[in-house]
Amino acid sequence: MKPSRSNPLFADNNNLPLPIPGREIQIGNAANEAAARNRFADYRARRADHTLRRQDADLALFAEFLSSLGIQIGNLAQEPEAWRGITWGLVEAFVKWQLSLGYAIPSINVRLSTVKTYARLALQSGFLTPEEYALIRSIKGFSHREQQRLDQRRPRQRIGTKKPTPVPLTPQQATALKYQPDTPQGRRDALLMCLLLDHGLRVGEVAALRVENLDLEMGLLRFFRPKVGKTQTHRLSPDALRLLRRCAALNDLPTDPQAPLLRASLKDGSLGKAGMTTRAITQRVRFLGEQLGITGLSAHDCRHYWATQAARRGVDPFALQQAGGWASLAMPRRYIADNEIANEELLDLE
Image 1 (cartoon, rainbow, N blue to C red):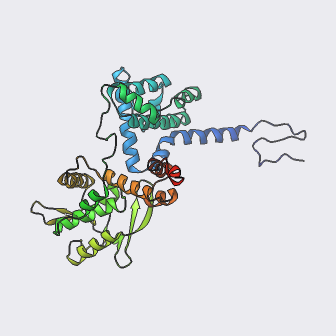
Image 2: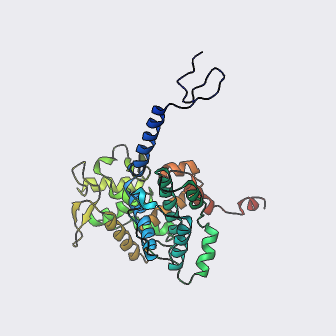
């Protein structure tokens, strides 16, 4: 019986493996080389723009650390050969360097994850050995408990604009933020706060909203979540629907369906051209918070409030994940766990 050529290891009559013909070896090696050359580009082509920006910043800081040691390298984000000579000791030292400078622990963990990801790509591209990659992969980030201990011992705890904890909001403050003066700018501000507080949208999602995303007749909002790459539909909250219908009746909304939903405001309180940047939204949310004596309020604080309120109402984690546009259950579970009353069952026994 002739050996089957559908198997790369051709068997003889005694079922012993025969050598793979030279041509097949050449084809296989060529395929490996092509895949290795394109490994970085293929990976980056699959990632969202905001993810690439963060990773580029992470690797730029790693390159800055290496430069401080006198190590000059190429572009770690796009050039596989730049990883030649990177060792687990350098990665470990990078983590400790960030600690000494006071970088936030969550940021250090994220950068370590980025370095590990690109180290894997460098391994697949042939510029890191399996042994070195295994050692890099073994480097662990810091747990939440370890973060608390480290921050207590560090004289300088954080670098960057991220806050260690979200700004807390009460339901009364959230209501006050949504009820703004009945002026064009006030109605725009109230709508902005409804989208953040009632629907938990991310700041980038709000900035990307278009008039065509609205269905006022059905009371629906359809929008795209770039972070998870999917389109969702929310039923508008009563406050948001009321505001949108009033804005439409008073010509506060752009007439072009393709135009951004929110309009910029002028110094005199009137509305200008369509479109608010994420920076403008961030500044406006901070300003509206300050008007109520809330310091440092951000769009993410509003999303935190939305998820916290949902957790306190006992919303199922799967429903919270779906509504919040998270890729996994990790974050919804954290909100629910943080808002559980530890002695609830004991009180029921009294």
